[in-house]
Image (tube, rainbow over all chains, first blue to last red; front, top):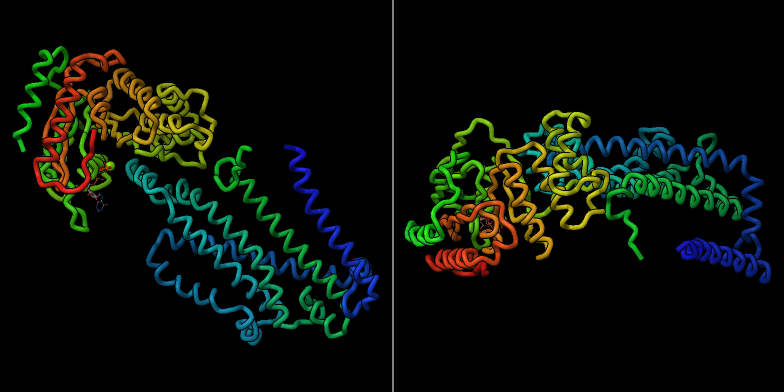
Length: 261
Length: 280
Ligand SMILES: Nc1ncnc2c1ncn2[C@@H]1O[C@H](COP(=O)(O)OP(=O)(O)OP(=O)(O)O)[C@@H](O)[C@H]1O
Ligand SMILES: [Mg+2]
């Protein structure tokens, strides 16, 4: 089994390295100029050389994404709890959340820029896209409780508060975590897309702006370097949310169950 | 409706006159209870039923005859549309065992069994002796930290029974609790249930599809017919409790099974009841 796991990590790593090596070789053998396609080694070197600029942008993008995700998590969960406890509220406001969700952020961003500073607008866009999956999933989870368990709570005359705390919330946890995983990815996408639309420069410039800016200056290696940082951020967010989900669910939920070989 | 009753009684009497069966005080009484759901389905019509303290009562009948509905009415999970349910005794704590184990998957066995006590306001420490006792009664000692998914189907059912027993209910309602289990596990759980019932001197209302199970377990079998759900016959099983495997080999057991199935078939033939027939 250990060998199996080693192979499972080794194989993708090898494939990844092989792809990089092939890329490097193709660029060198064909003498492709860096403005067309930079070699991985050059991208690495650019990452180091431009680190002072790029790291600043990385911090900007990551903090916007995380702030938006935290706000979306808190807001989405609270709203879902309100909806679950008071159904008329759900009928009344759910359509609004759907409208906000189905309208593409890229279309909302210019409008937001009229009212907000670019930094704020990016934050709001990122929040908007991350909010809905968390709200929708948590709402679904809070209402998909085993009816027999609900009957049991009713038979023992449990207050609706205890029913929420001891039954609905734990039952909703896997759904919420699913929403969080989707929301985490979307928050980053929202932040990037909104920043491209906003085109904010200077101090508060994030990674998306670096990409746009490098494009104008034909600094393709730096464009790739910024892209690498975005990908790494996305992977990091995914790993964090997946780990959190595993930590909370692996004792009892089927999604985290490892099948016996 | 009263027609099938004398025959059933006659058999009960022929089996020998009452070794046990003192007149037991009633725990609950359904008087002319009718239940019509919002979609117009008449699940029960004019049901008269008395549940006596300390008895093991089975509700036997084909699918859709309103057995679960009676249990839900008794549990207060639904209200009768007609008639009423009286509880002569002042205290009537209930325990409910569903067809599926219905455990909370995120909680271990201890926490699941603790739940009814916790809802009564007992802390974990206060409840511990009672929870451990209930687990011992169903033969699950030592499994308190296991999660439901780590248990077999039979063990989950035992945990579910332990949860129902936690509050020491005066009345235990069981809705086809063993229907999803294999024959061997079911027989074992039947035996354990008989022993437990005698030990606790509990009152049990047990819903089943199985003639054999009902005869083996019960003091009294109420046979029901569908469309609309109603009580059509009653069979007394005078053999003393607790029973064991030997009881299944006795002529008396075979005769009671035959009589009960006959009552069941008569019940279903009595009205033009199309569709499903709960055989066996
Ligand atoms: N909540 C409900 N709303 C509408 N109709 C219902 C409801 N619950 C039960 N019924 C109907 O009432 C009738 C009796 O149902 P019930 O569940 O009591 O039958 P049952 O004897 O327990 O059957 P089974 O052996 O299949 O469990 C059925 O026809 C069913 O369709
Ligand atoms: Mg039923």
